[in-house]
Length: 218
Image (spheres, rainbow, N blue to C red):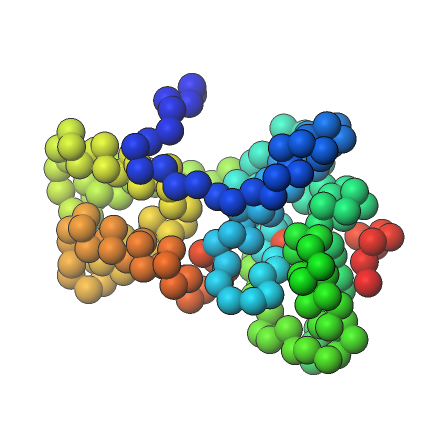
């Protein structure tokens, strides 16, 4: 399906300038580039400090898995390539006997923060757990969600839904509809407020809004 263009209310994600210069010249692996861009977006949705992702989160990210499917490269391999290049930093953190791989942008602040998780001077906190996405399950699109739970669509409302679908993760949209229905608040405005709140404050389940044993790990 052809991309129809960016919606009127599209949001923008801050990206470090070297991505568009030196790194764009150097990165010759499509999987690595896709993984790097997705990590930057996922980290931008996190709240608090330091911002990091676990391997489990990345392996459960549907968008990344679909993007990498065209390359035949696994998430862990793509992450390792980005770590080897120095774009990302990766560590193995041990908490209460559970070991997790954590990834962040390779900045001084984030590199030092992740190192403190490893040497025990800082607690990484409860690390999010996510089941890997298993493959091509069909998600209900935002239009069918609206018609099934609220009512008939108007052309103006359809445009608003199309813009929201381009801005928010599909899982957020499904959860927002579910929450609105459970509260018996069956209106798009109410659902939109839920999505805006999650974008502003973070989503409590740790989804974006909060994924080898190779050189480059501390």
